[in-house]
Length: 379
Image (tube, rainbow, N blue to C red; front, side):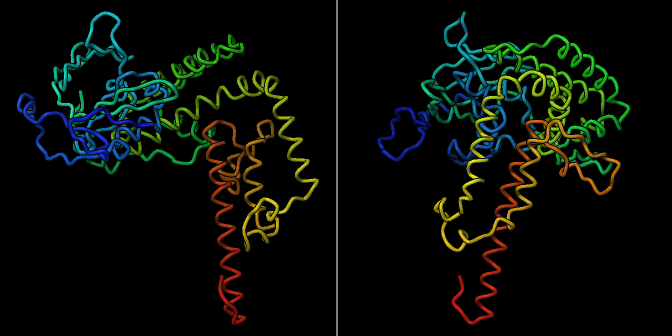
């Protein structure tokens, strides 16, 4: 939930409040005009909530640069952390990030202090309160980032393109194709081996396990981007950067899948799996129709055969222990293989929903064509 702070503007519809205009002259202004924007429309806010919501939720103060000021910048995890803070336990009015950077806030002025490459003073244009459960997070909308400068967007014709379809085996083969990644992959396999040999699931210690996996993942991303110029050039573009993070995450979770999900969690989740399976069998036995699910006509009349592709696709999430088809078989695509990792399972669910939507569209369109041919009213 987002709530605006009390504002000199008495308008009940005001979603954010500008601070007094006379103080703006104290701050170096930006070189481009900034149009007012709502917090929900800000690209930084959208990105942190969709990609790094855990960082946002753990913060007490988040600085959100204006979308216009972010053009040409890549929103990395370090950049996000450099704008997310908790109150300093030592100094009033100061706030520190998890990466060690410190800012001070005085009225509508935010100044960078320790950890930043340069000292900056930025103007707060508005303040919002965002509530997550019972926690209040102060969100300051600022005129420009606390660090970083836009870079010239130039696409080198030799720059690689990061694959967008996730498959842990194919993703690993893509990384291994580049000799510059050998060191990073060797370190990754050693680190994963140590984790696998020492990991024991203990109820209540999930956060510690997640932190360990994130550390493995962050180290692999950092090493690859430092050692491989092709990857470093590619991820200077936001979309490629996001695909790169997904690819490395998928490789890491592919390595850990057997230990975490098969050897550890399956036993603890077996009762839930059994319950869900019993529900599925009960529904199948009763042959409940779409109409009984209150689905409207004509979709309620769709036969089960219309959803065969969607059913086959969704079953991929339960094939964790099935033998993998060989990638050497040209008839088998990565998207047709069992979904192992969280990203693969999410993609599988999305594909299932897309297939259901496509099946409904085809069915409704076929009825429309039939009614037209028969001279009846179209649906």
